[in-house]
Image 1: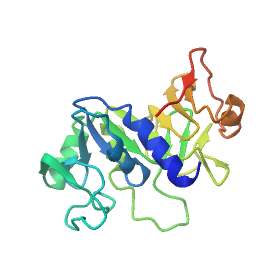
Image 2: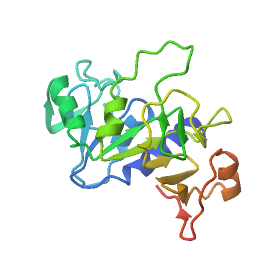
Image 3: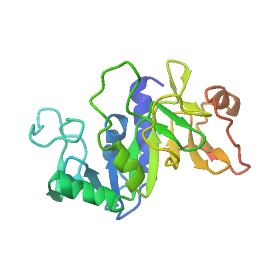
Length: 219
């Protein structure tokens, strides 16, 4: 799969996790693609921390409204019934525990559920943004990312980059599989049939737990 196919595959699998009535925050980058693949007929409320609920799919080319952008500055659509509010209200929703799931990208995740997704030492960054609030305020935290970075492991025994939060990640979705972070470690719940268990483990520094009821990953 090329990069675009990988992103689409991951976004589609994440979208299958969402249920009717969920309030969901989609982080900058790949997670925003989830908005294009929501389950048909489900009433899912997508929240953007810069101040609205009711995000829709990406706008058609040429029909973008430059005044309606998500937290990453990308043009988005607003569904009927969508609402706008200030940052204080937005973060009250997040910190108040009203977000059912946040979907974020990552630089590193480890087997203890630690997340590093905001900086690489020595490189200029704008700051952590709303991620630290989202990973502690949301009921569930899902990481959507490519399994490796130019061949380097991203799913580790222990993160080496500065942490966004400790012990907060619940699920990891990559092009190789769907994983759950448990007290015992990272469980490979689903595997992309294009890969073997041995290939997934070789691309993962953390030791994966392979359950007997593991199934094929479908989108």
